[in-house]
Length: 255
Image (tube, rainbow, N blue to C red; front, side):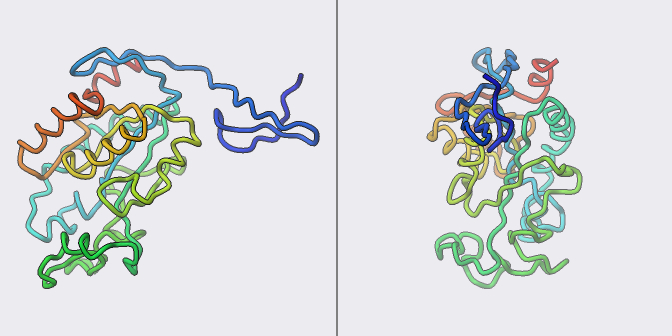
């Protein structure tokens, strides 16, 4: 029987239709199996079922003129993830692994942001908090489609990349991320970005709770927090939530 030609959705989670038939068998994509060395085990995985989440590599967290720098945080540790990402992201694109840019980008009216969350970022009401303009360039802090929420220039997004706005530390909270990944048939997630012990870790934990297989790329992940926060994050990922490796091991496995 010839498969209908009209495609509804994205393979492997797609129907194939014509005037008389709806083929909902969802044939799998040909697998691309690699063996990846991690800190604890050799992990055998299928790249056709994988995606890479790059979390919060945006101006407010990584640029010297961004919000974190404005409030006195040294953002140079966060920028250490840029160079490894510049190397591994094009390789993943080339072999068809989707790149998902998961950036903190609030609604301009902040109607979905609780008082408790707003308090975290401006507890006294006298500082520059969510939605307030940065003194240097007037960009509103962590607001969707602003300079503050944009990916840093060194990590240029491509048209086929996927962008998802998030509104909390977890990229799965009140966002379409889970639906997108399930529609794409992705079950293995590589994690990168900042801050390792905050948004990256919380998103990774939620992914684990939702049944995804989680792999943290250590050299592509950074934090402005003290070193012990990063060490605790790596320990907890290895112990409870997935695997830890680096972009060089991933590149070697792909090659």
